[in-house]
Structure formats: structure tokens, C-alpha cells
Length: 139
Image (tube, rainbow, N blue to C red; front, side, top):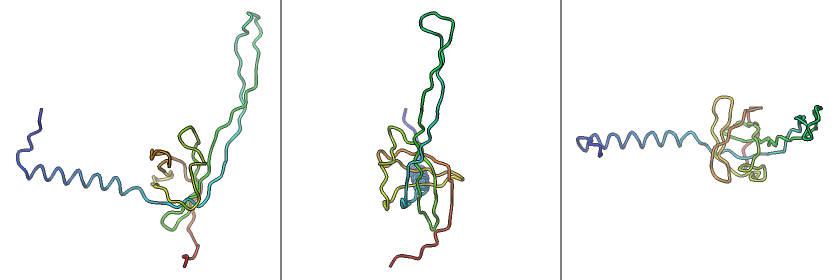
């Protein structure tokens, strides 16, 4: 089924509105400079328990180590320095980042959304610190 817009004027109006909406969404992303990053992974331990495989009524307990891979990133944007943490996984690794390079970010209240360098998909992290950038401009 085709949509009948009635006349060319209505079609142009809808086209302009869609274009403005697209520009508005794209305008949220700004280029931030990666000032620093470091590994802040957390080690955690847990226990695994379950029924004995040989039918004995005792329950064996095993300690299992686990690690939550995290990366602390410091970004400079609009005269401020933001520090945040992102979880590392198979799609985002700390090694994807490069100091001094620019990356698309968006501030969302107390969180920062960043586009992954590998595929451009969005990841979010909580803002840990926000400071005014007091460095004099480079000559």
C-alpha cells in the first residue's frame, strides 16, 4: 500500500521534519580527546557447589576465581575532563583506545555514552569524576 501525501507541499514538510530529526540526533555526539586509560579490572571469588556425582550425600564446594574486566578512561570534552569506567568484553577492549585520538561521545546526565572504536556501537559508563580543564591552550 502506498502512502498518499496529498500534494507535494505535505511531502516536502515531512521530508524537512525527518531531516531535522536526523540532524538533531547526530548533533548529540561530540568528539572527545582520549587523555588516558588504564586497567581497573576487579578480581572476585565465588564458590561452586552442587550434588556429588557419585551419589554420596555430601556436597563438594570448589572456589572459583572470576575477573570483571574494566577500563578507566579519561576524556577531554568542551573544557572539562571526564573520568569514567567501561566494562571490557569481546567487542570492546582497552587496547582499542589510543591516547590523543578523538572518539565520539555523548553526555547523558551522570553517564557517558561512547562509540566503540571497533564497530561504532554505543557503550555507556558512569561518570566517576568531572573536572574543569585548567590547562592553557597549546601554541
